[in-house]
Image (cartoon, rainbow, N blue to C red):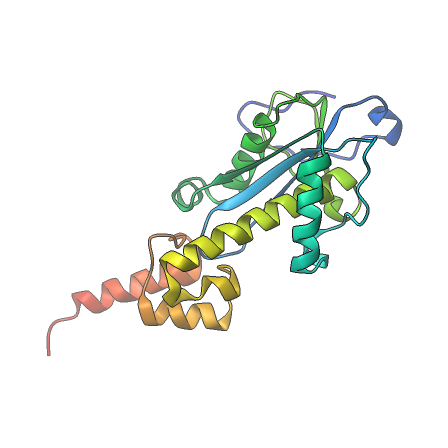
Length: 219
């Protein structure tokens, strides 16, 4: 398979199963594309075939307690794992797709063992010097991607609890930055925080409204 272009991401079809024999596979997934605040996270995991982990699946289909339990097993039993992120500023500068791809690349680069093949959740691969294969719904079909999904999700949830401690008025502990009615109400009440993504429509629109209001002549 040809390597990715150094300048562009690409869509890929899954490799035939027999092409994965004897590969050192890492699964890669991200968490946090949709929220209005906080970084986007990605994880890369190389599972140990000698130490299988039961119950791996899409992190969104697991309870928080089950995710936390599996995350501990993944960190303890994997051959290698890494978690990385892209900040709110990077998201605003690059756009969320490119920031997600960059976080994935950082996670892969953070592995202490070099895989021969990266399996990516979705339909787009990051630009990396490594063969990669994008798999739609891979987080529920491929154990390595499921494991990465769990690590990315639990890492991001923990980060949002830290943001809640810094900015309790936004209730990040409840909505984790997603555009819920509660979050939108707190955003309008308290304004835009340093960790909000300014290019996302609800945040961008509020900034524009406040700027327009500030320019209105005094009554």
